[in-house]
Length: 513
Image 1 (tube, rainbow, N blue to C red):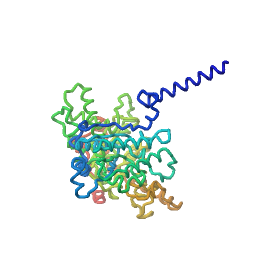
Image 2: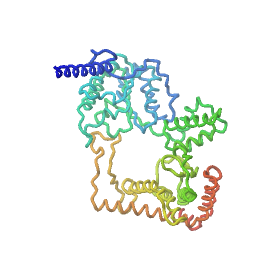
Image 3: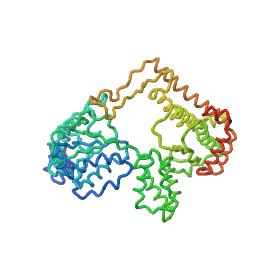
Image 4: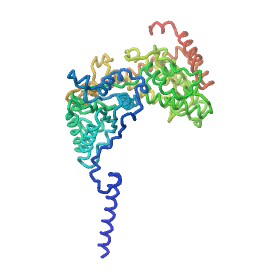
């Protein structure tokens, strides 16, 4: 008798668990088991999207590409009478934070059509067949509300290539992808439904997604240049009271490599710092401190260094600045600090390019190597032995030297060939071949590569020591000034660096030229 009671209790618990899961899946109805197959897309009805192209900056080329899509959604008859077919799908490709989702929302706002947004991961569930059912439901809703835009964020979660080695087999995901391919092919030419998607990993997408008739058009949404960063700062600074000393041009110059999300975070951090200081406006100092916080991390006021450590850190950071500059580097030294920040940084040297660069010469890369190893070289010149503070510098220098040898063909011993371990497919492959496949490298060539990498790093370290020994007086003067101030920047730092360059021996100037 007790066993029958226990069995009944167990069955009752299972029923309650099942009933609760059905309610969560079906919006409160225990009987709606088929709600698992309903699309979970969030829908912005016509006119609800207030985002327009005025809210998107720094991606002018991408906006120009999307104007045609907007015009088609507004005036489809203009294209139909000429027999033109608008692209079925538009794939936005770019690094994280560059504004791909914002751009898609702006397209819906400009076209004034419903906007259906969903993440690629929301299609795939543990139950087989659910993802395919959700795809069918999504496209059915879109057809009923046309003209409209379907936006799939993080498409790589759904559209990963079925031929990537080592990716493993996932029957549910592959069924979902197959249904997506079928649905995109199933549109009639006159249905005004545009499928937009975004990804930052295009090299792993299935080639079937990228063929004509599906995602016909791929639009690069890249990290903005200096002019684009200035425009993005203008957008995010609209609702922020700015001080009269704020120079957005200089902020744009000081933030190379920042994406749109990084710049939005920068403006917000500056506003938070100003509020913490009980200021009525956000001034240039707040922006400068915000850049330091974003780039180098939070200031660690409780990390007290000994006098010996502070001196070593000061020489280390000045060594970076001097060695890179004297070696012929193009980057401008903007700030040197020995204030501990972040997880482990005891100081930092902030450099920014004099102008936007899209190519790097062998000479420029060699000077960058010298600058990276300038900190270790300064410790060897002044104290006679290095410390663990150069660990991150050595890692960066080794990675750069290896790239010079195996990717850029800048080693005479290896030759002008690319022997990189990875050959990523970036929207160029048609059959998926070569995605992530390791290139075969023989043992002799591998040993030669290792020797060349070591040679480049050792030569750069020797060159850095040589420059700092010849300019020891400048190294001492700037380091002592840094110990006194803790932070050097602006005109004072520029004057010290220029004085060091002027004091460089004539023979060294001639060899650099």
